[in-house]
Image 1: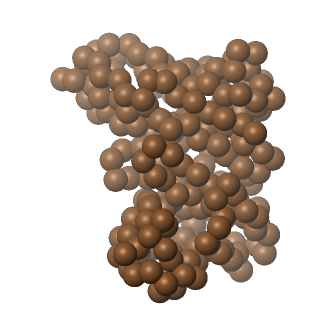
Image 2: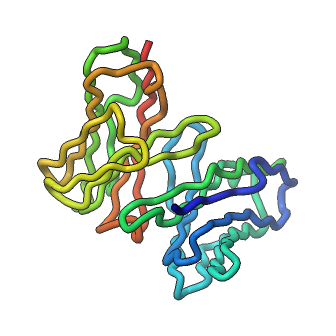
Length: 111
Length: 113
């Protein structure tokens, strides 16, 4: 069964810093991975979806990569801003029709 | 505006009193699902549906029911709620499965006394 892990659970950085969030998964047969953002008291917003054939996806200051062989995905945030403060979750297929989520990394960007 | 709506957003109830949380999407998505989010346990899938009249259990289905009579609606039913079902619930939809971007509703915070 797919297990998804995100470390660290919380991260605090000064504004302007480039940062990397990590996501590890146990089933290397994963065929896609999604990154989400969750603001306090709100639902999840899909940020990026990487297919296994793509290895990388970019949206603005966000770049996500997927390395199946190592069981890892990273979300790179360039030039972080206070508005980036949120919890970031990754999710991969847990089975043919299910998603398994990591527990998230709570990011705080300090002005 | 493309969206997933849930109602109610907040609900406080008592043990054993049947309740329904509604979920509706306006994107003609085939795939819909329900999650609960608990501190320290993250998001866990309760039920999902691949299309009308097609539903299946997720990781934590005990104590819940769902139905998918129309493509746009996917209600979550708690026949006899218990305090351990106190949680934050999210409905989500996507074009045709978990391989597509998921659209989440705003969440329903349920407290069972």
